[in-house]
Amino acid sequence: MTGCRPEVAMRLLKLLLILFVCAAAVLATVVVMLGPYEDAKAAYNKGDYAAVRRLLSSFILALAGNSDAQHNLGVMYDNGQGVTQDYAAAMSWYRKAAEQDDAYAQTNLGFMYANGRGVPQDYVQAVSWFRKAAEQGDAYAQTNLGVMYYSGRGVPQDYVQAHMWWSLAAAKGDADAINNLDQIAAKMTPAQIAEAQKLAREWKPK
Image 1: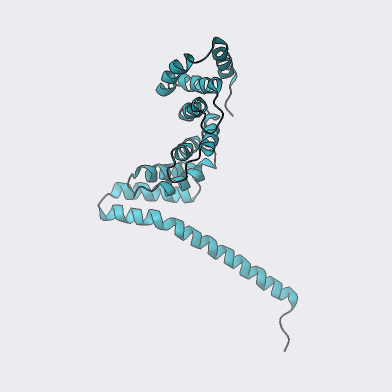
Image 2 (image 1 turned 90 degrees about the vertical axis):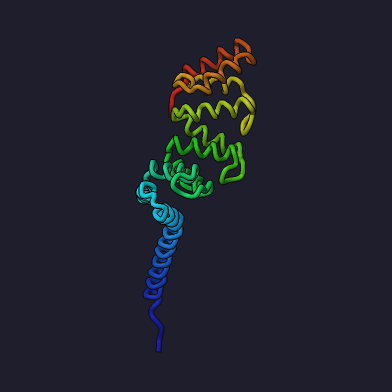
């Protein structure tokens, strides 16, 4: 008796490989679904039907790749809104949205890195994510990026850069940035302030 021909065996091997990949993808999806499902079930048992609806609606959209929903789920896990507070889960959902250039998620991801919530504290990563959002024009990210430059965390200390980012955020009405500008101006020379103001005038969102 002879075995199957090599080309048939190769086709079978490819088919098995495809089936394995599909099964792995399904399993990964099931694992991801378990957390929100359990949280939704707990909310249901408590009679918090609004939380159930909000969680499941966001989760369905998030699985479909909607960055707003992914960010919203991150916020819910970050703050324990309708779910058990879970910084690691918040990081996971923030990252999914941030990688789609969602500025709010990028800012929150930077905040998580800066404060070591759900991830080891990493100022370099915090600066990286704050910058991505700041360059899109997010005022909160611009304020936080200014703080990093002011304190020299994750970047070399640079009052000119701090002043520039705070100027941009202050122009959008960010109260912290406005207060920070008054403080940093006292530590800068007129030439440094003039340079920072010039950079702010020339800045354009990416």
